[in-house]
Image (cartoon, rainbow, N blue to C red):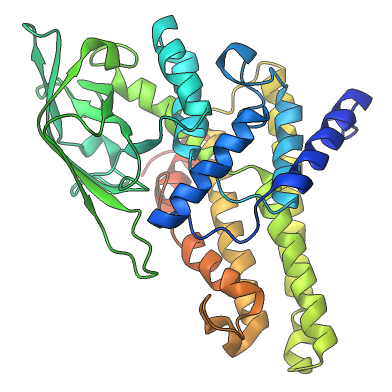
Length: 392
């Protein structure tokens, strides 16, 4: 693995850094609030207009045709500059790779440019009341309607991130109820303004209102909104979950930037001289968190080296997901212990350190070991499919 970037890649980094430093917005509200979501969309439209929204996509779909290496570089610079989390992430990081792999030319032309431009905003319809980490347990159904040339959906999806604000949802629906658990499902893309769709917000402890339940009551979708083959949705969905658990959703740039902020926080707390004994005692914990973020960066470089040489991540994406989700919790938890009682101050408190960002980050990080498949399930996947261990 060559850790040196080429002159062309360094030039790409310099261009990205200059633009981001001049344009990244400061202090946007949470993208899981109505106000914050609208401001994030405004920012992402600006990102698209300048050609930075989806750098690794082909130019005809709004990208720059950049390599995976250049995408990693951009992600590093994006988070180094303080770029906010992307509210388009379910589209550009999860659905888009699946469309590139399984979509028809017409679907690519229809959906990808609008997704890159933040015109179409996507949420993910995986979880149901009785199907969380057990995705094969879904019960929402889509019945064939030959007369109209499509499908009629009935059922419910829940824990739909930013579902209250998006205009499209993608997900799995049972199209053959008699088939085996991992068969008879179809991957559908559904407009949330279709007749029969009801979106109901789910309150969160932190007050953000982006979570939603989505109900389908005789919702019709045409055949051109099937992604992949009918009754072949499980394989298509596994491609999406591989993106969700692998490197695209959570690039190392995000965690390396957080680790750098943690080191800076320790320095500031140490210089302040308050609670000196506790702060000094946490020096090794802070260093350990920084090293774990760096380890994730190096592991990702190894994964990309494999990808550019034709080696798929496969089940290794579960290993990646375990690492980044637990790293995220550890980084933020270390910051809270470093801050002591002041960590509990919310964003609106004038005495909150860094605007209460560490508590907000910790609250969000706690969901990491759950979404994209719980880490307990991912450990089983790693044991069986990566390590080759037998089932009991």
